[in-house]
Length: 285
Image (cartoon, rainbow, N blue to C red; front, side):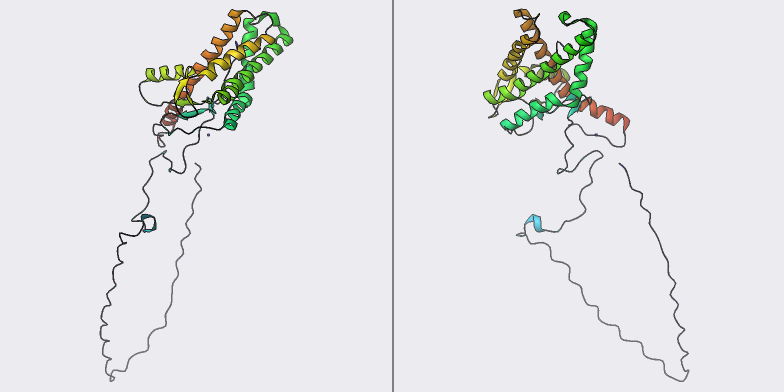
Protein backbone atom coordinates (compact mmCIF):
# COMPACT_ATOMS: atom_id res chain seq x y z
CA UNK A 1 0.00 0.00 0.00
CA UNK A 2 1.31 3.32 -0.95
CA UNK A 3 0.67 6.76 0.42
CA UNK A 4 1.44 10.05 -1.13
CA UNK A 5 4.16 12.31 0.46
CA UNK A 6 0.68 11.65 1.42
CA UNK A 7 -17.16 -9.34 10.68
CA UNK A 8 -25.18 -15.28 17.17
CA UNK A 9 -28.21 -15.07 16.84
CA UNK A 10 -29.93 -17.85 18.58
CA UNK A 11 -33.33 -18.94 17.28
CA UNK A 12 -35.74 -19.53 20.16
CA UNK A 13 -36.80 -23.18 20.49
CA UNK A 14 -40.38 -23.85 21.82
CA UNK A 15 -41.15 -27.44 22.97
CA UNK A 16 -44.83 -28.42 22.77
CA UNK A 17 -45.72 -31.18 25.31
CA UNK A 18 -49.07 -33.20 25.07
CA UNK A 19 -50.64 -35.83 27.40
CA UNK A 20 -53.41 -38.40 26.49
CA UNK A 21 -55.66 -40.49 28.78
CA UNK A 22 -56.56 -43.98 27.49
CA UNK A 23 -59.81 -45.42 28.91
CA UNK A 24 -60.10 -49.26 28.94
CA UNK A 25 -63.37 -51.24 29.59
CA UNK A 26 -63.55 -53.15 32.90
CA UNK A 27 -62.82 -56.88 32.70
CA UNK A 28 -65.88 -59.22 33.28
CA UNK A 29 -66.22 -60.87 36.76
CA UNK A 30 -64.85 -64.40 37.05
CA UNK A 31 -67.12 -67.34 38.22
CA UNK A 32 -66.11 -68.36 41.73
CA UNK A 33 -66.62 -72.10 40.90
CA UNK A 34 -64.42 -71.99 37.91
CA UNK A 35 -60.87 -72.93 38.63
CA UNK A 36 -58.44 -70.21 38.39
CA UNK A 37 -56.33 -70.47 35.31
CA UNK A 38 -52.82 -71.60 35.89
CA UNK A 39 -50.27 -68.88 35.48
CA UNK A 40 -48.37 -69.13 32.24
CA UNK A 41 -45.01 -70.75 32.42
CA UNK A 42 -42.24 -68.24 32.29
CA UNK A 43 -40.60 -68.19 28.95
CA UNK A 44 -36.90 -68.72 28.76
CA UNK A 45 -34.94 -65.58 28.32
CA UNK A 46 -33.38 -65.34 24.94
CA UNK A 47 -29.86 -64.03 25.25
CA UNK A 48 -29.09 -61.05 23.09
CA UNK A 49 -25.61 -61.25 21.68
CA UNK A 50 -23.37 -58.26 22.15
CA UNK A 51 -22.33 -56.52 18.94
CA UNK A 52 -19.02 -57.72 17.74
CA UNK A 53 -16.24 -55.18 18.10
CA UNK A 54 -14.93 -53.74 14.84
CA UNK A 55 -12.37 -55.86 13.17
CA UNK A 56 -8.83 -54.58 13.35
CA UNK A 57 -8.74 -54.82 9.58
CA UNK A 58 -11.71 -52.47 9.21
CA UNK A 59 -10.53 -49.03 8.09
CA UNK A 60 -10.88 -46.34 10.71
CA UNK A 61 -13.07 -44.31 8.37
CA UNK A 62 -15.65 -47.16 8.25
CA UNK A 63 -15.73 -47.88 11.99
CA UNK A 64 -18.70 -46.46 13.92
CA UNK A 65 -17.94 -43.49 16.15
CA UNK A 66 -17.20 -44.39 19.73
CA UNK A 67 -18.96 -41.36 21.13
CA UNK A 68 -20.06 -37.79 20.44
CA UNK A 69 -17.58 -35.47 18.71
CA UNK A 70 -15.34 -33.51 21.02
CA UNK A 71 -16.64 -30.16 22.18
CA UNK A 72 -14.95 -27.12 20.77
CA UNK A 73 -13.62 -24.43 23.05
CA UNK A 74 -15.42 -21.05 22.92
CA UNK A 75 -14.27 -19.19 19.84
CA UNK A 76 -12.70 -22.30 18.30
CA UNK A 77 -13.79 -23.29 14.81
CA UNK A 78 -13.78 -26.78 13.26
CA UNK A 79 -10.75 -27.54 11.06
CA UNK A 80 -12.95 -27.29 7.97
CA UNK A 81 -14.15 -23.82 8.96
CA UNK A 82 -11.10 -21.62 9.60
CA UNK A 83 -11.60 -18.07 10.77
CA UNK A 84 -11.98 -15.83 7.72
CA UNK A 85 -9.00 -13.70 6.81
CA UNK A 86 -9.52 -10.06 7.71
CA UNK A 87 -9.07 -8.09 4.50
CA UNK A 88 -8.84 -4.68 6.14
CA UNK A 89 -6.83 -3.40 9.08
CA UNK A 90 -8.90 -1.09 11.29
CA UNK A 91 -11.49 -1.39 8.54
CA UNK A 92 -9.62 0.98 6.21
CA UNK A 93 -6.17 -0.40 5.33
CA UNK A 94 -6.14 -3.14 2.65
CA UNK A 95 -4.77 -6.49 3.85
CA UNK A 96 -4.94 -8.75 0.79
CA UNK A 97 -1.35 -9.98 0.78
CA UNK A 98 -0.73 -11.38 4.26
CA UNK A 99 0.16 -15.05 4.85
CA UNK A 100 1.45 -16.97 7.89
CA UNK A 101 5.16 -17.72 8.08
CA UNK A 102 4.42 -21.02 9.88
CA UNK A 103 2.32 -22.38 7.00
CA UNK A 104 3.82 -24.66 4.37
CA UNK A 105 4.95 -22.36 1.60
CA UNK A 106 2.79 -22.44 -1.52
CA UNK A 107 3.68 -20.13 -4.41
CA UNK A 108 1.05 -17.97 -6.04
CA UNK A 109 0.44 -17.53 -9.75
CA UNK A 110 1.21 -14.48 -11.85
CA UNK A 111 -2.51 -13.82 -12.11
CA UNK A 112 -2.80 -13.85 -8.32
CA UNK A 113 0.04 -11.36 -7.95
CA UNK A 114 -1.66 -8.95 -10.33
CA UNK A 115 -4.98 -9.49 -8.55
CA UNK A 116 -3.38 -8.56 -5.21
CA UNK A 117 -2.02 -5.37 -6.75
CA UNK A 118 -5.44 -4.58 -8.22
CA UNK A 119 -7.27 -5.10 -4.92
CA UNK A 120 -4.73 -3.08 -2.92
CA UNK A 121 -5.07 -0.24 -5.44
CA UNK A 122 -8.85 -0.13 -5.89
CA UNK A 123 -10.21 -1.14 -2.48
CA UNK A 124 -12.89 1.38 -1.51
CA UNK A 125 -11.19 2.76 1.65
CA UNK A 126 -8.14 3.72 -0.46
CA UNK A 127 -10.09 6.61 -1.96
CA UNK A 128 -11.16 7.78 1.49
CA UNK A 129 -7.57 7.56 2.75
CA UNK A 130 -6.34 9.60 -0.21
CA UNK A 131 -8.95 12.25 0.53
CA UNK A 132 -7.83 12.57 4.16
CA UNK A 133 -4.13 12.67 3.24
CA UNK A 134 -4.86 15.31 0.61
CA UNK A 135 -6.58 17.46 3.21
CA UNK A 136 -3.52 17.18 5.45
CA UNK A 137 -1.23 18.05 2.54
CA UNK A 138 -3.45 21.01 1.69
CA UNK A 139 -3.31 22.33 5.25
CA UNK A 140 0.47 21.84 5.35
CA UNK A 141 0.85 23.32 1.87
CA UNK A 142 2.74 20.25 0.65
CA UNK A 143 3.50 20.65 -3.07
CA UNK A 144 3.12 24.44 -2.93
CA UNK A 145 3.08 24.71 -6.70
CA UNK A 146 -0.40 23.12 -6.66
CA UNK A 147 -1.72 26.14 -4.79
CA UNK A 148 -4.76 26.19 -2.54
CA UNK A 149 -8.48 26.06 -3.11
CA UNK A 150 -10.46 23.42 -4.98
CA UNK A 151 -7.96 23.13 -7.83
CA UNK A 152 -5.03 22.65 -5.48
CA UNK A 153 -6.90 20.02 -3.46
CA UNK A 154 -7.96 18.21 -6.65
CA UNK A 155 -4.35 18.03 -7.83
CA UNK A 156 -3.17 16.67 -4.47
CA UNK A 157 -5.96 14.08 -4.47
CA UNK A 158 -5.19 12.94 -8.01
CA UNK A 159 -1.46 12.64 -7.37
CA UNK A 160 -2.08 10.73 -4.11
CA UNK A 161 -4.16 8.18 -6.01
CA UNK A 162 -1.54 8.00 -8.75
CA UNK A 163 1.20 7.32 -6.19
CA UNK A 164 -0.79 4.43 -4.72
CA UNK A 165 -1.86 2.95 -8.05
CA UNK A 166 1.58 3.03 -9.68
CA UNK A 167 3.47 1.94 -6.58
CA UNK A 168 1.13 -0.95 -5.79
CA UNK A 169 1.09 -2.32 -9.32
CA UNK A 170 4.87 -2.16 -9.59
CA UNK A 171 5.79 -3.58 -6.16
CA UNK A 172 2.97 -6.16 -5.83
CA UNK A 173 2.26 -7.12 -9.43
CA UNK A 174 4.61 -6.26 -12.28
CA UNK A 175 7.99 -6.58 -10.57
CA UNK A 176 7.14 -9.77 -8.62
CA UNK A 177 6.02 -11.36 -11.89
CA UNK A 178 9.18 -10.33 -13.75
CA UNK A 179 11.56 -11.17 -10.88
CA UNK A 180 9.66 -14.30 -9.71
CA UNK A 181 9.30 -12.98 -6.18
CA UNK A 182 6.42 -13.37 -3.75
CA UNK A 183 4.77 -10.01 -2.91
CA UNK A 184 3.05 -11.30 0.23
CA UNK A 185 3.94 -10.40 3.82
CA UNK A 186 4.55 -13.56 5.86
CA UNK A 187 3.31 -12.83 9.38
CA UNK A 188 5.43 -14.37 12.14
CA UNK A 189 2.92 -14.20 15.01
CA UNK A 190 5.35 -15.48 17.67
CA UNK A 191 8.27 -14.27 19.75
CA UNK A 192 8.70 -11.06 21.72
CA UNK A 193 7.02 -7.86 20.59
CA UNK A 194 10.25 -6.14 19.66
CA UNK A 195 11.54 -9.14 17.67
CA UNK A 196 8.29 -9.14 15.72
CA UNK A 197 8.53 -5.39 15.14
CA UNK A 198 12.05 -5.82 13.79
CA UNK A 199 11.02 -8.76 11.63
CA UNK A 200 8.01 -6.94 10.15
CA UNK A 201 9.79 -3.64 9.55
CA UNK A 202 12.67 -5.27 7.63
CA UNK A 203 10.49 -7.30 5.24
CA UNK A 204 10.73 -4.42 2.79
CA UNK A 205 14.27 -5.73 2.20
CA UNK A 206 13.64 -9.49 2.58
CA UNK A 207 11.12 -11.66 0.75
CA UNK A 208 10.65 -15.12 -0.78
CA UNK A 209 11.12 -16.28 -4.33
CA UNK A 210 8.53 -18.41 -6.11
CA UNK A 211 10.51 -21.47 -4.97
CA UNK A 212 10.28 -20.46 -1.30
CA UNK A 213 13.89 -19.36 -0.97
CA UNK A 214 14.77 -16.16 0.92
CA UNK A 215 16.07 -13.29 -1.17
CA UNK A 216 16.54 -9.53 -1.22
CA UNK A 217 13.26 -7.76 -1.91
CA UNK A 218 14.16 -6.39 -5.31
CA UNK A 219 10.50 -5.98 -6.28
CA UNK A 220 9.85 -3.65 -3.35
CA UNK A 221 12.92 -1.47 -3.70
CA UNK A 222 13.10 -1.33 -7.50
CA UNK A 223 9.34 -1.00 -7.85
CA UNK A 224 9.17 1.96 -5.49
CA UNK A 225 12.25 3.47 -7.14
CA UNK A 226 10.59 3.32 -10.55
CA UNK A 227 7.38 4.75 -9.09
CA UNK A 228 9.33 7.66 -7.62
CA UNK A 229 10.81 8.34 -11.04
CA UNK A 230 7.45 8.17 -12.79
CA UNK A 231 6.12 10.72 -10.29
CA UNK A 232 8.39 13.32 -11.90
CA UNK A 233 5.75 13.55 -14.60
CA UNK A 234 3.13 14.98 -12.22
CA UNK A 235 5.37 16.71 -9.67
CA UNK A 236 6.97 19.24 -12.05
CA UNK A 237 8.59 21.26 -9.28
CA UNK A 238 10.04 18.23 -7.46
CA UNK A 239 12.33 16.52 -9.94
CA UNK A 240 15.71 16.74 -8.25
CA UNK A 241 17.68 13.70 -7.12
CA UNK A 242 16.84 14.49 -3.51
CA UNK A 243 13.15 14.78 -4.35
CA UNK A 244 13.24 11.33 -5.94
CA UNK A 245 15.07 9.80 -2.98
CA UNK A 246 12.62 11.44 -0.59
CA UNK A 247 9.68 9.86 -2.42
CA UNK A 248 11.45 6.47 -2.46
CA UNK A 249 12.24 6.45 1.28
CA UNK A 250 8.77 7.78 2.15
CA UNK A 251 7.16 4.91 0.24
CA UNK A 252 9.53 2.34 1.80
CA UNK A 253 8.86 3.68 5.29
CA UNK A 254 5.11 3.62 4.65
CA UNK A 255 5.27 -0.01 3.52
CA UNK A 256 7.43 -0.92 6.51
CA UNK A 257 4.90 0.61 8.92
CA UNK A 258 2.00 -1.13 7.18
CA UNK A 259 3.72 -4.49 7.65
CA UNK A 260 4.14 -3.85 11.36
CA UNK A 261 0.40 -3.20 11.50
CA UNK A 262 -0.25 -6.46 9.60
CA UNK A 263 1.92 -8.34 12.10
CA UNK A 264 0.01 -7.15 15.17
CA UNK A 265 -3.50 -6.58 13.80
CA UNK A 266 -4.78 -10.10 14.72
CA UNK A 267 -3.47 -9.56 18.27
CA UNK A 268 -5.16 -6.17 18.54
CA UNK A 269 -8.43 -7.53 17.19
CA UNK A 270 -8.35 -10.59 19.51
CA UNK A 271 -7.60 -8.42 22.56
CA UNK A 272 -10.55 -6.15 21.78
CA UNK A 273 -12.89 -9.10 21.16
CA UNK A 274 -11.92 -10.99 24.33
CA UNK A 275 -12.25 -7.84 26.42
CA UNK A 276 -15.81 -7.17 25.25
CA UNK A 277 -16.93 -10.82 24.84
CA UNK A 278 -15.64 -12.71 27.92
CA UNK A 279 -17.90 -15.70 27.18
CA UNK A 280 -16.50 -16.14 23.67
CA UNK A 281 -12.73 -15.97 23.95
CA UNK A 282 -10.63 -16.19 20.79
CA UNK A 283 -7.53 -18.36 21.16
CA UNK A 284 -4.12 -16.98 20.15
CA UNK A 285 -3.19 -17.35 16.51
